Length: 178
Image 1 (tube, one colour):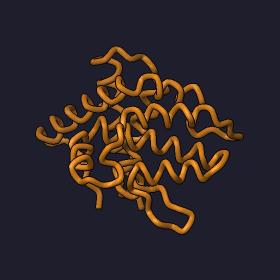
Image 2 (cartoon, one colour; image 1 turned 60 degrees about the vertical axis):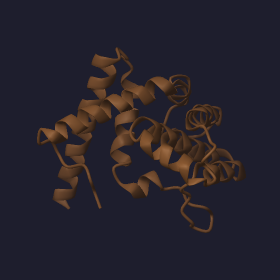
Image 3 (cartoon, one colour; image 1 turned 180 degrees about the vertical axis):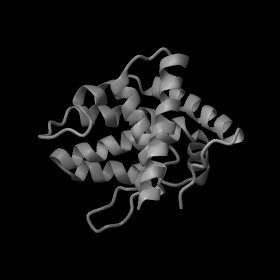
Image 4 (spheres, one colour; image 1 turned 30 degrees about the vertical axis):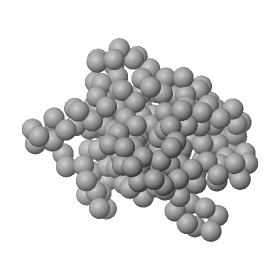
């Protein structure tokens, strides 16, 4: 258990440092709440079970944005906000960190092949920001900023990826988790 906790701490520090450097130093974005959210998303999404964490009411994994959108429309209140926030995170992650994944999706001809991840990410963060909840995991103003600054965040995540690839080549931490 201690080893897992140590690994989590290492990952949080690693991604916090990379994200802060990319956003504060390289992009001049002085928004600690936004930067902390993005680094936290990276830590969560290290595990593929979290990237593909949305489930239908029957427990089926939702791994396409089209399915997630349909699920969001079927839900209400806090559950709807959660799904839209996840869509925003999902599209931001893939657009910024692994844009080659989106190209793969487009070539696959599946339900997501014609979707614009940027447009859907901006819209989903915005919709999530309009749904009131009792307790916020992601504050409404933050979700609104993620919607408004989606493209900047995509670019910043690309910078984070370049930095972690450089760190990996130089003997930084291994990020793959089974």
